[in-house]
Structures are given as structure tokens and as C-alpha cells.
Image (cartoon, rainbow over all chains, first blue to last red; front, side, top):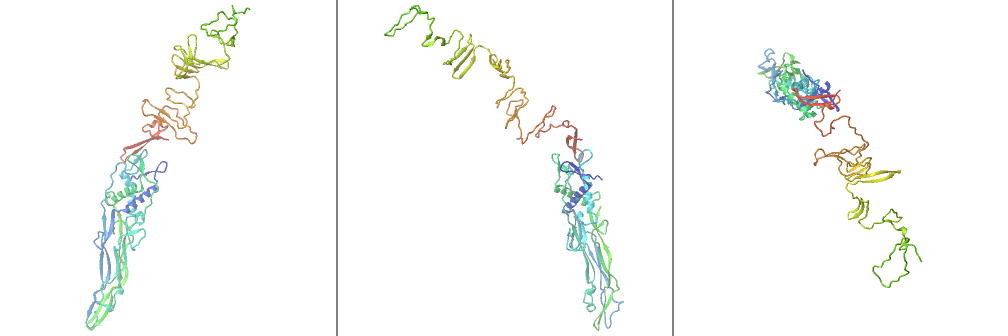
Length: 311
Length: 229
């Protein structure tokens, strides 16, 4: 780890940045990354490449019919489980290249005896890796801008809804949709949505630094980067590391894999504890119908977690 | 009747016509007037004499002084001339300074030089003393020794340099808004200007130090010299 303290012009002389001042540039790196993330997620109706997650719910058993009397409960089909698989998130990586070090591409620091330009490794250690580490945390503030999280609402302050198509809909049987009088007429599967889950991307917030690092210009004079210049340089390297790091700073997303949970846990609810709500319907002497409707109380069948992984 | 000074006297001669070559002979040793003017009032040409009247020489040839025609005052179409007529003879202009005759100005005739305060001028104008003038024109060459040089409004000091060409170095000032004093340091060296480059060296700083700007690989991109602590 060779993080450096970049030099800046304090109005009368060169001065090393403090840790908090360096952090403002870590935030700036995150902000510029958020303007053009290299690891992106999209949502579509199907065909995603993140792990599929299943929603399960009960549906009524098939109704039975008999002449002269109702089929017994024992002979009437039990409610069954319907499983709907969601694989709606597609993860993509941009192709990124970085600027080669000319010897004075990166900011300068004081090495104890001279003003020296950072190497690329110094630059990564000072700004880029801390930015990616910050982005990979479980928080969902602007310090994680450009990364994604799951929410149960379509509108979250400080974030942009990726798609109005939920990445997962938790459903359960709608027990009110079944009635004895419509046995044979109503669908077996009458779901009702418990919760929809949506994918959001965190928006960046620009807090322009009041000081700026220095570099050697064409005449080898020290010159301050503009905010856009240093921001764009950091963006380039964050984008590259996020998708191509060989030192453990790629960012990927997964469901229930390794990493840090991002946003709401995805809950699959199902009715449990019931044995089937046995109901009968007389249609005519030759059509005595019986059916078992879903019953029970909602309970969590399983929980999925959307995660971000730095690796 | 005898009249002293006249050997013979002929009383009254009336001439009825003009007679050429008529002369009186004899010696008028006691004549006291000529043309009604007392004889004592005429200037002598062969002895020291004075006049209380104005002496005018109303011709261009003017006045010549000296047994050897040493000195002349004359006029011609070019104006008035005061001239030494003897080859290489010097001219001394003297004044009586508090009772003492002193030489105020001296002209070296053989060298064609003027000395003021000196009778041995070594230049065209050699002044031993202070010169005061309201203006001076023309180039100054050679060594100038002065305790103060006051360059007046809009004035400059121009250095031709080693070559008499179209290029000179001019000293001038921005119009001062208060009295300013620029003191040159007590060292031998070269004055550095804002337009100079390559002149300042580490040796010019009292406590020399340097600051290097290095590339990311350690190559020296620039070295900045200055005074350190």
C-alpha cells in the first residue's frame, strides 16, 4: 500500500493534502464513475444472467366431481405449489482502457526530498482503490454512486429506477378469489402480489473540491488539474478496475453469493400451516363438486439477497 | 613782432584763386590748437596716451595688438573675430578676483583646447571645477565622474555597447509616484531582469537549495533553485 499525500497549492506554497482532503477526491472519483459506470445492470422480462430466484405460492387443487354425493376431502386434490422463476437482471461490463503513464500523468507528492509524480500504482492506492472499496459497502448513499441496490418502491431519493419492471414479485394465493359457488369456474391459480422488488442505481452528487492536486505540464511546471481533468482521470481508472482489476477491485453483483447485501432482502412468501380449505358445490344431481382452496397464513418461504462483491 | 615758434611771419595773405601745393614752412613748436581743438586733445601715435572719448575703428580690419602683430580684433562676413595671430600662441583670459589676477579661461593655441580652471587643458574643453548647465546635448564618451546625475523628465541613459550599431540598451524608469531608491548590492555581478533567462544560478542565493520535480519513474523533470532554510 503506497497511498500518497498529493500536493496542492494553498495560495502561497505547496502543501500536502490531509486524509480528509484526499477523501474528497475519493468521493469525486465515485461521482465521476457514476456518470458512466462500467459495470451495469439492466432489467428485462426474462433472460437475465444473474441467478434466477423463485416465487412460490399455493394454488387450489383440481376440483373433483361425482354423481349423487360430494367427493370426500380425502379424494379431493390438495392445494399445490406454483413456482415462478425470475431471472430479469442482466449484468454487463464495458470495455475500458486507461491512459498510459507518461511519467507525469498522475498527481505529485513529496517523497521526502523532491516533488515526485505518482506512479499508476500510487494513484490506484491513493484514490481508486479507496473509491471502489467505498462503493462496495452496504450503504446506499451518494458515496456508492453508480452502484445498484434493491428497493420495494419505485421511487427512492438519491437513486434512479433502472426499470419499472420489478426484478421479483413476491406473490401468495389470493384466498378471497376462491368461492364454493364458482368451483370449476375459477382458475386454480389466483395469486396476489405481496411485494414487488425494483432495481435502482445510486445517483452521484458532485461536491467540487476546494483544492486541486498538481501535475507537471508540458513545460514541467506544476499545474493544478481542473476538477474535470482529475475527475475524468479517476473515472477512467475506476471504470477499468471495476471490470478488469487483477488486484481484487472488480465489482460484480449476484444473488445470494459472496459480497455485501445491497438494499432490501427479497422475500418469498407463501401460505403455510393450512391443510387445504375443502369446499363443495352442487351443480346438479350428476355433478357434485369438491375442491380444496389454498389456506394458511403467510410466511417466508425463503429470502434472497442481492449483493455487491468486490473481488 | 616776434612770435615764439615761428621764424618769420607774414601777415595775412589773401588768395583770390586756389593755388596747388601751397605750404607754410617752419616749425610750430608752440602751436596750441589745430582746427580749433587744443593740441593736447589729440591722441599720440608714438607714445602712451589715453582718451576720455569713445575710440572707434570703423573698418573691418579692426585692431591689431602687439609689436609682432600678435593679436587682432576684426570683423568680416562671418562675424566678429578675436584672434591670436602668432602661430601656436596661447590666449589667456584673466580676471581680477578680489585683487588677485587669475586666469579664468585659457586657450592652448598649439593644441586648440580650452581650459577653465586649468592652463594645461588635455581635452577640447577641460574644466577644473564644477560645471552647471541647464541642458546638455551630444554624446558623452569616456569616463564621467560625478556624485549625482539627474536625468530629467522623460530622460534615459543609453548604452551603445561594444558595437556602434542600431541597437542600444536604454535605462529608463516607470514614472515614480513617490521617491524611490534602488540600491545596487556591494558585489560584482550581473543585474538580473525579468526578461532574463539562464542567469540566476544557485550561487546567487544566500542559502542555496533546490527543489526537483520528478516523473513517476524518478527522472528529473525540472530543478528549481532558491533560498532555503
